[in-house]
Image 1 (cartoon, one colour):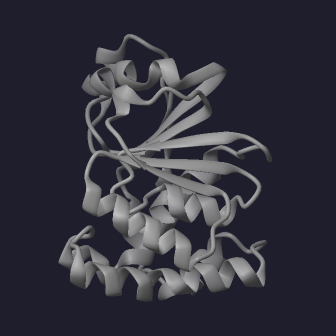
Image 2 (cartoon, helix red, strand yellow; image 1 turned 60 degrees about the horizontal axis):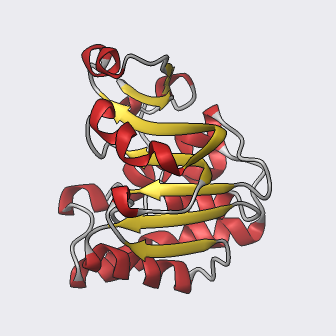
Length: 204
């Protein structure tokens, strides 16, 4: 199935979003096109499909888990702001703390967040293992292997919290390395575009 254009793709799968949220999603592409010309945070071939490969992919987490109002979410290795920025638009009553170790990426995320007037987003340039705060949830998009990543951030998770990862490809060996119970959710169950074949949300 071919992807719908722009914001129509988001509203097709998230029909309950408000006019304000639709407007915020609509601003994402122009903002990222503008900033990507100055600081390359999204590959040239992917930016043309930003709503499919970045925005909707990020929102795949919301098909698997509903963040309760008032909860705090840490997005580790946010890069250009994914999955944190799209999730922050979708969940205005949830606080998202977006971190990355690379200064230019943090700058872009800060400018995008400011332009969208997202009051529920904070941003920090820091290495994952140096973060001191604790969160209800930790999210990340294909940062590194789970067995390496989980020990970096486990101390940042409140009791009963979950780590949620967006990953793709053959993952059985990587999951086995963790020696932990990992829930797998196929994004092709929720999104019908061909690009989502093999893409998953993992919950630890």
